[in-house]
Structure formats: structure tokens, C-alpha cells
Length: 189
Image (cartoon, rainbow, N blue to C red; front, side):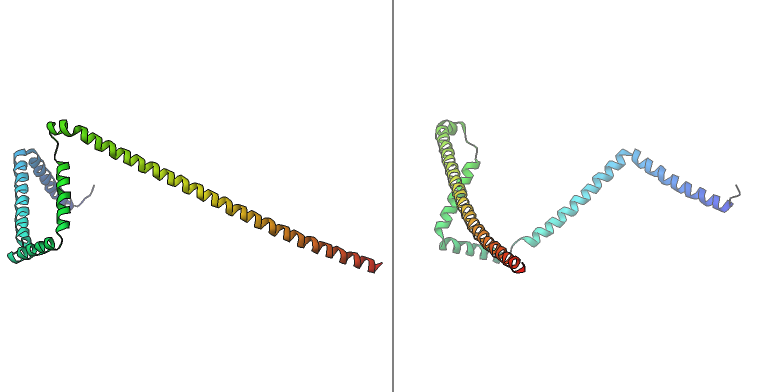
């Protein structure tokens, strides 16, 4: 209860300042026309700066007359060196442009059956390629299985031969040990 009057005054001043800021903020929020005007003004300024920057960028990016002349000469040189490539490129470009242009009703009526036939041929060719691929994959799998079985039977034969040889060695070793034990036993008697 015994607070310092100076501290209380300072607290009151801070509260008044804070309240003043809050009242100003609420007043601004309530003033819709002023906020709209500020927003439009900000957007106009932003657009102006973007346009100014773009204009400077375009001025820097624009080629000079020598660059254009050099590029044209280079293009002419390429065309003269490779006319077949130019023809193929132009045909491909024309084909792509033709595909992208929507067909008219008359084209659909006249070219519809031909287009359907081409599509069916493409499907048939794709199906044949798929079947051929399946057949090759099946043959490859069968060959791999046969090779694996051959290798397995060879490993089994080698293992059996090795086991038989090892068993014979053990049998002979056991017989020799038995004879030695028998001889040692008879010599002790």
C-alpha cells in the first residue's frame, strides 16, 4: 500500500500512452475508407516500383544491333550446313502444331474413320510388342531356371562325390585305428 507516488505517476503515464495507441489503432480499424485508400496507395507504389525495375531490366536485356546481326548470320550458317535437319525440324513442328489445333466437325466427319484406324493399328502394334516382351521374359526365366537346376545338380554331385571320398577316408582311418588298438591290446596281454 505504501507505493512511491512517482512510481504510480510513471505507471499512469505508461498506461495513458498505451491506451492512446490502442485508441488510435481502433480508430484506424474503424476507418475503412482510410484503410482502403492506404491499401490502394501501397499497391500502386509496389506496382510502380516493379514496372520501373522491369523497364530497367528490359533495357539491359535488349540485345544491341551487332548481337542481332551475329545471331542471324549464325542461324543462316546452320541452315546452310544442315538443310535436312531444318526440314525435319519444320516437319516435326508442323506435326505438333497440327496435333494441338482442335479439329473441326468436317475434319471429324472425314478423318474420323482414318483416325480410328490409325489408333487401332497403334493399339495392335503396342499389344504385339507387349506380347513379344512377355514371351522373351518367359523364355529368359525358363532358361535361367534350367541353368540354375543344372548348377544345383552339379553341386549335389560334387558334394556327394566329396562326401563319399571323405567317408571312405574316415572308414580307412577308423580301420587303421581299430587295428592299432587291437595290436596294442594284444601286445599288452
